[in-house]
Length: 331
Image 1 (cartoon, one colour):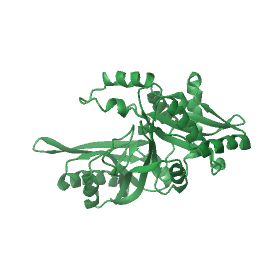
Image 2: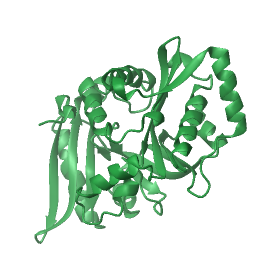
Image 3: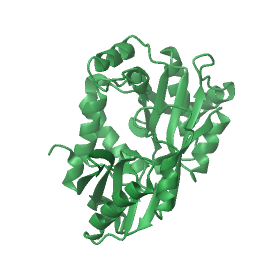
Image 4: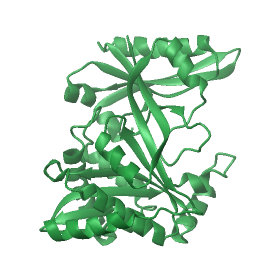
């Protein structure tokens, strides 16, 4: 009723039961915006959870497949909960490490169930990590020198998010997001209402210094969005209730008690790519995060074939530590 995603999409939800016990679930999703943008006929599934039983998994996938097929869609893709702009991908390695904010996690047997059900790889997504509480992320000296030269050469400046102009800043993010990511695999533009909803959700926990904008002559040409890893505060809450865990989370952010962060977005306008602007953003984020006692960082997710950004992060000391897979099956 309230999620703006459903202004261009629909979904139905299914529960698998055996002998009165819930043994699995799945959402079948038709995202019309995706199909209009990519000119294809893909249906999606998400919010999939299942016991380690192929009969249950097959029943769930067949139900979602039949649902999307009635809408003239020829492919079932997932997991996406609900779309590429939300939690997406199936964890296929890095099971011994916890998930960071807005990233999925699942048992290893999920991949076996999906492959046995006839799904094949569509695309892998990479998460990279750097630093630790004992050995915080430190920008290499060469990066510091390079960023200084970059600023002089192109006359660019970097500033943090201005919370006093939050509404105007959100409008700026809308422009940048759809300009900077339009060529990415699976990309779908976010509507104004969807970005407004995310901004409202993020506002209480955002750290302005970790949302930098790069400007040239007063025009924003790039930005990054980094959030403290709220899972670090919530992970110890075993009963599933958000209260009082939510207050604990906000307290830890305010008191600078969180030591982990995730870079969710980092985008550069097409005409400014290849000039080192991304390095300037990373340098800013690392420096400001360290000032708050954040020693560990994750950059995610990255398309497996985005060689440029993966190579840049590798040079800065980041290493891949988790892989997520999106899979397809004909309907």
